[in-house]
Length: 313
Image 1: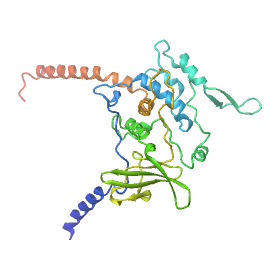
Image 2: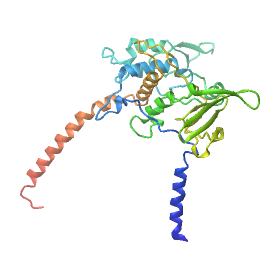
Image 3: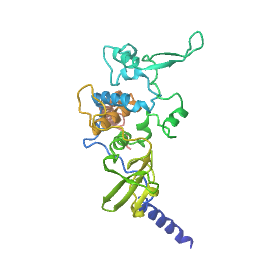
């Protein structure tokens, strides 16, 4: 009997793998059709103009719910940042960065002489303002859900693969099925939103809980809301964030058409930069370092042959 145990374990694991779709799981994230410019070999770089537009998307859309506690306004003007200028190597002196920071009013950590709180315009040295004073307020404003901090979200969702975190953001923001949502009257007489699936194996109806939104790229299990073949439950789950990037949600300063995919592409690149602000400088050294190592290897080879030329080995 002991001899059959490994076989049974293996068959059990295979069965679980074959039924994983039925148990839920997120759809694999994908990059834009042209890929990510920073993921190109050997030393891809972020699209600076796209990162600038992505900051605009974050400021006008994402920052109303999501914080970026690890980022300071001066980071925007540091070398490799979206608003870096050779004229202002010290980002604290960059007038554009100063203007961006000054648009935000923050609570000064030092009260006035009467002990009352003091609000002032932010300066480049200040960290990005959080939309809520604390986590409890954030959850209370979002139906009990805590909006994640976006400082290193691409790192957290990237699993170590180049561009995977940005692909997750891009896929999530473009993956909502809001255009396919239909409404019917539920058993309690209230309207219920649902999505019909008819794409080969996945055929059925997925009911969308009140206050939640279906997205195939968000990890979860839609089984309880699925009315169809239990072996083919749709990928994904439900999250509290509604679709945020309908066409024209922002008006880009540079005149770029603000489609859903364009805004998702831009904000994903901005968050990719935010998660690793020095990546551009680091990657710019890749080619020189590779050339140096090749030349060093050649030099070491000839040195080896020269030093040991009369020794048998």
